[in-house]
Length: 198
Image 1 (cartoon, rainbow, N blue to C red):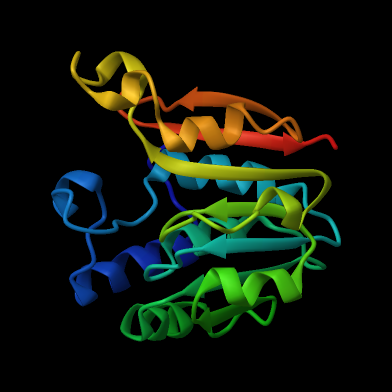
Image 2 (image 1 turned 90 degrees about the horizontal axis):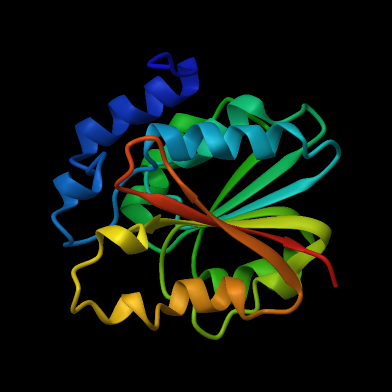
């Protein structure tokens, strides 16, 4: 399970050179970090099923999560990833330059992605997602994934997220989705995953 696709290894090396954190611990809560390997593997599983489909990513970073998806998605799939920070987007463009199926856009996801929808998979990996109807950008049967979630049992007793977590609410209270929380093998991180049913 320690093996990673060559493109992911390239993206991780680029992250190191750019000083971009590879883990939440390295980021120390001060900003974004790269997709964890278990997140990447999960995304790769979903991307592999997007035959003739379209994938969107919000928050490219330096392209580690993008590389996981691009490494697994079919040849007839398109991946559009949006990053607000031009420096990070530039690193990602260099990492992904040889893959004609991937497009790295610098800008705000909320103003960029609606005109490019619908999507079969959306990886909401960063930025302020308030005010963006991501579920509305999905095809029926399309999936949405959000990471950087701490499993509820690991939250401090006094954490407000035990009773009211905006991320969990967005997945579990939207009647257009069937959702689940997936705890990763490290047992310290989880993903929220939803499939559009209406």
